[in-house]
Image (cartoon, rainbow, N blue to C red):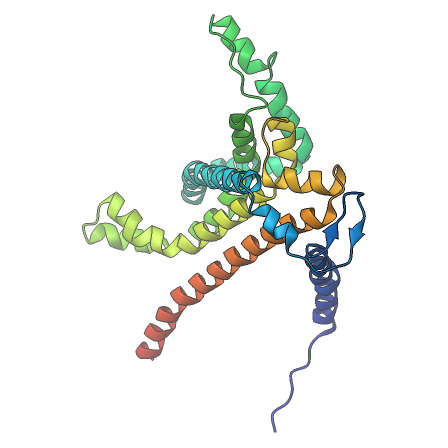
Length: 287
């Protein structure tokens, strides 16, 4: 007779915490998304798909497409900037590596709002950037309260979240693999494409998810750097809850964002399991 595994008390505490802080709020949001709001502002407890049908209107669909496109572009930019940084930190040794890691984690020690207002003071009409342009005799450039300002804010604030997973994957990579590829006559590009990238692609994918998913629901950066002219999905959702008091429609937007999140996590889990299966088969054949 097999002994039944004993679940430690810490696991039960985590399970209860997960139910209370994750599953229960999501269930409330999901249930609220199927309710109706009358013209007088009252919420009617009647099942309806009106909120989801309203999200199919072009005005909301356009906001969703703009949010997806901006988040994808900012994630791609973070990857292009962050990958060389992570590669440099993984290869360099000595005090330079410690200094690089400190500079990487300094943004985590600074308040999120302060970092955004730092961008405002840098790219404002009287900011440092335009003062330098005025000194050089160049015309003033309007960056704040535009889509470009939101893009810069997203890349600046979320870049460390992508560098860390890639750096962790590169740190675990066996350095003898690069030496073996070089001894076999592979060029640097071939070594990167056929040796380094296949071994760290999971870290790249996870880091991209860590950046892309929060960008979809970002509210503070579009509100402070985009102004009233730039509407993104997170900002529209918050306005539905706290300004228009349309909780069912705001809950429908939150549910759509949650489904996108769960879908991305499901794809990541499926992709990881698919990559691990051939490795386990090779190990079994070797045994």
